[in-house]
Length: 148
Image 1 (tube, helix red, strand yellow):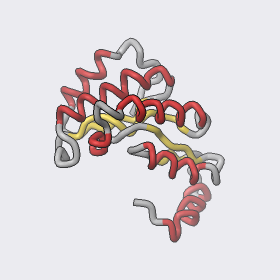
Image 2 (cartoon, rainbow, N blue to C red):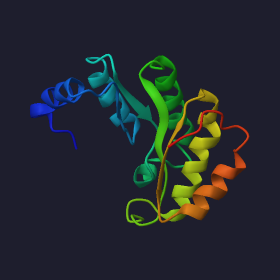
Image 3 (cartoon, rainbow, N blue to C red):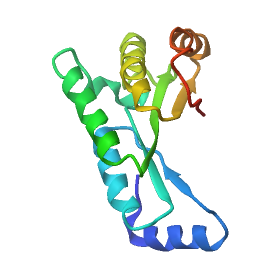
Image 4 (cartoon, rainbow, N blue to C red):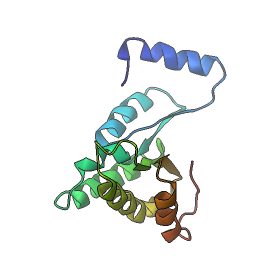
């Protein structure tokens, strides 16, 4: 949730206190677009692009390629402000938003197709370590820039 009333003041104070750079984590295409608007106001403000595991219910077989293309285009057009893929991964404690199988499917779907953007991975893991590891291991040789 963004608190717009004092957001500019908060960001200004953060930079004045000595922070060099800030990354705003986004969990959907729409959130990345919103974050990019804010990033355009500050030289050292950046964002991420991808779908959070609690938002993977927005994917389905009929729209997954369209969503993927939107992510890729957004990352390519804004490569100077989108510094990581994510936040994406697995969250097995909040399956009321998206079931485990859907989370695994669309985490791997994003990973498989977005590695080529050559951005670090901004990973999410809650009570899903083994499955996260297993999926990441499949793409170990293709992941070049690490992640957090």
